[in-house]
Length: 297
Image 1 (cartoon, one colour):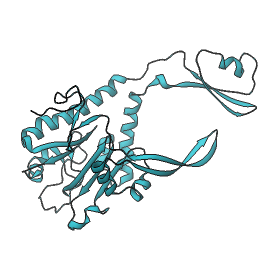
Image 2: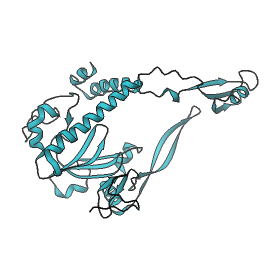
Image 3: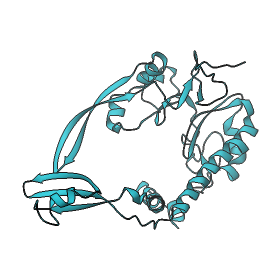
Image 4: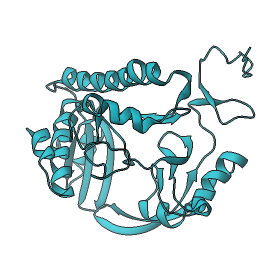
């Protein structure tokens, strides 16, 4: 029902609301109840239910002193009742992975062959480099069976119709017909995508630029991190540091802090970088020798 309501949504609030309602249910199916704990608020030290007795328990985890008359004691649960349908959440994840793999191996590879390379992938998305073939002709041909094109302009130059709005399992062109000119993927959830623009000198501007860095505030990404920083990081292996202001709460006291953090890191510990190239192998690939050198013969 939420999917149908999302299809009928007329604004961003409704779209996000019905998406969240689905995601919230999924999250509860996969909840790790082992992480739940018991918190006791005590105002005395001695006695059966005092802080001393609770701290002495084998399930004691942590204590927070608010003042001389109030202490919070955190205990691990001694019994865990598994009442969440984890198999439902696992099945949803498996179906999502199967959908992505089927799209790549059963559709993209037979269609494009060696002219198709995966640059980046996440749980429900893929970034491709397509060579020697017009991807928009393929989308126009197969839009009714493979793609959600509902966000394309109605009068787009590719004559792609608006179909399959929010239909489950359909792939979507996030840029709606605007080609990607440059992609830089440094690590998981750390990348930049530059869309093609009419002005060839605008490749270093913020026009049509998408930047994603997990753990960094969006305002800092927009204001401080530039495309040049991504280029410098990937070409010269230069780490980018930033400072960001955050609001924190501790013991019911709200305060602000300045955090120094690595924003861009050229070292991806999940992939092996081929020397003299931007290409990578997954660790364990048979081209990688035991000494860390690759063999491409």
